[in-house]
Length: 67
Image 1: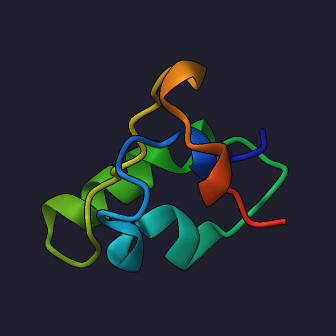
Image 2: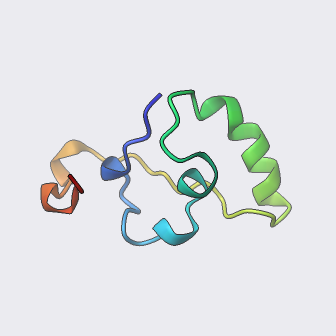
């Protein structure tokens, strides 16, 4: 699985404490494998909750995509 931050509607709003970029970075494996563990850590207040909210491609701003 590739995590595409350009499809996240929280991009540029909450990137600084996004657990995806802080812990995983662009990993080829599935985030679903780690979701339960990350939910437990977030509930305990050890990490920020997952904030990747997939939007539709129509709202993506191509100018915001780094090349």
